[in-house]
Image (cartoon, rainbow, N blue to C red):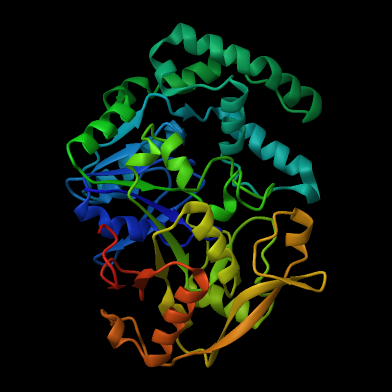
Length: 428
């Protein structure tokens, strides 16, 4: 049985949660391998909407073991708030496992995230202010806090002292904020220790043992390819590895054990926060996509920037991740358009290119080169096979498949779990 990575092929919010949820009944483990509660997944089951931020989408599937891997940064307050919320709705959350090597978001991480973003002014990155970046920075600087540290108060106190030595100078002398005490931080974190203890495991061992037993694992990415710390539109990116390679470093499962890599892309494109976005629309078409598609952040409620499908980005995502499949979501949003533009290349300083510029300045100045495809007016939300789609909608999918360089194996035609057209088996 396979190990499958599911990730965003654009700038996030592509519908990865729904794609993961649809595979949930056929897998034994769903593993979140990067990010924190700065990325939200919305899943609709039998008309009920579930908004998940930190928890893996697999927690909604009976019989699946959801896992938070070592590559995730964990805000304990958010974790238990989410667990309580879904438990109150009848979801069994007792199967959740959390890597002891995952890093913690401390209260001072959230404080620094918010004040530093304001301090940047026009140079702001557009973070969610949830402490994700500062927690990852501490991880790389080797002054981070890990889940295991919660179970040794002496070690935890020492690590918090070391972290706050520098941070308090920054808060007081640069940002004119009050110093944060070691005692209040330790007390805040320790209140969750005993509740968390039964969930904590060496998840690398758990996952590799599951593969040895020929069980199926699904690795779920937070954020998306174009927000990856190495391969995204730096510096307007997240602080973790959101591409396929992150599934290995974020879980302790080797690359030779990964069988399939599934990218998820909207039939158009959105992004939140700052940074380049070549196909962004600033007119009525952009407003139409936003309102018709309900393009407001799951985590923040922020309106998303909207644009037409970018095949250059799709090809880039295919190459960077080694995609085997694409899941195309929100096709139904485009219903009613007479013509639908698709970006097939860029023009940078008068020169045509078919690749994503790695130079930040060039990407900022990239202008989309469009081809227009026929639209359709028929309601497609009830379609359950490719042949049921209007001819123009079929041609749109086939054109995107050719332009993107990866087969489109599933098509989302509505928000519900059942509103999907399967063209190829994602697990075969």
